[in-house]
Length: 234
Image (tube, rainbow, N blue to C red):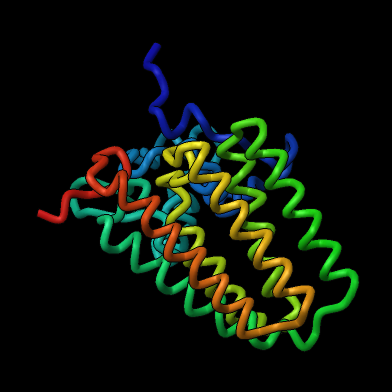
C-alpha cells in the first residue's frame, strides 16, 4: 500500500462525519501549525482522498491560500507550502512593525480594564511557555499578546493585514529556532510594552515595540542561511 505524502499524513479534518469538510480552513490550519515544513509538496489527489472530495474544491481552496501567501504554485510541478527568502521574511517583520505602530497609537486612548486583563493573560501564557521551553506555545501566546495590544484600536482592516503578514511567516516556525535565552529577552520586551500600555503612553509603547522588533530581526538573522527555512536567493 502506498504511503501517504508528508503533507497528507498530517492533515486533520475538523468537520464531523457526514458533514461537508472545511477544506480551506483545514488546509490553512495545517500550514499555520508549523507541522508542514516550507517547500512541502501538496498533492491534490491525496488531499482530495483524505477529505473525500474531488480535486476541484481542493484546487479552489489552494487558490485562496495562494492569494494569502501561504502556498505557492509552479507550472508542471504543483502546489507547495510557501517558502520565502530571508529578505522576504524580514520584510514581513517590517510590515508588522509598521502596522503595529499605527494600531498602538490608536489603541492607547481606548484601553479599558478588559483589554488590560487580556494583555496580562497573554503575557502570563508567554511566561509559562518560556519556562516549559515550549516554542509552539510561545508562538501562539506571542500572537495572542500582540493582537491583544492592538485590539483596542478598532482598526479591523489593519488588524487583518497584520494577521496576514504574521501568517505568511508561520510555516518557517521561527520561534522553534530561537534559543531559550533569546526567548526570555523577547518576553522581557513584552513586560516593558505592558507598562507603557497601562500608562497609556503611546510614544513609549511604540518605542518599546520598535526595540522588540529590532531584537527579533537580530534573533532571526542567526538562521538566515538555514535551507529548511528559507529559499536561497541565488
